[in-house]
Length: 324
Image (cartoon, rainbow, N blue to C red; front, side, top):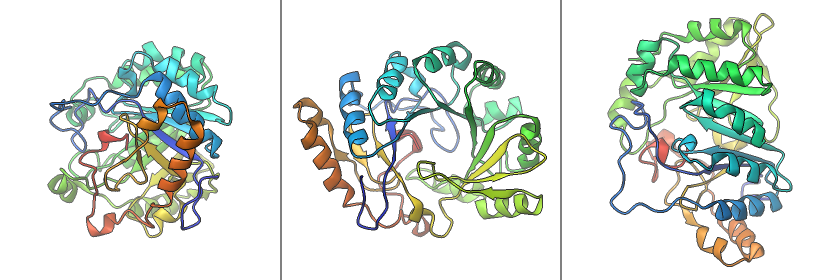
């Protein structure tokens, strides 16, 4: 089992398969994706297989496929199938902006997808378009309904609440999940290398949302060891649940159980750590034990905290770089 020097064990891998995104969300890529002058090739299917097998051999149980926007890769169903068929991997999830979700969701589920997370930063079509640059809310809602119809058991909706945009829509979201078996996750806006002014103007503390939920009768749910960082809540009058991801809360990093690999094959020990650590070169020598040993050694370098409270954002210029 992968374990760092602070006793934290890692069951969960977030695997980015592209850094390209076709949305222009204000808090992430307000000017859209900017192609680098010398782009690095994305991980191949073979390299993804090597990485998935190495992490599985070290105790990883869950792989979440991220981007950028992972749906932009035409071989996404093959990637899902490869991850799901890896011995030791019990769950395969995806985080998507919902681009062409109605067209794609059937192929993803048929390939073995277990969990779907969709980013929806407003339930108002005009506000959704203002935040993302796309008028696709109804299409995304159709895709979520389709996922429910074909029997996908775990569907979550991710939302970043921001003062100047959707900060007043909390109750609208709660009303939506009253009769929807969906987990709604509010993600606290995080400072990155290029959004300091936006962060200062729009940050809403997750602690305040948590207090509102408790006052309205929501109660906490115990997390499983392979779960993500959200504190989840349930209410007897609601079919849906609420999760809060609060990276600025005290002791947030104590329960960290996840590692990240970028689409260029770099291991990131923390979303807000320094430059990634190379793994790709070890995928090209047919030596799985060497790859596993390198991962073990790298994990020993993981720091106790992300230090976001001190304004340290590490190498993360924007969240699309390694999938948030």
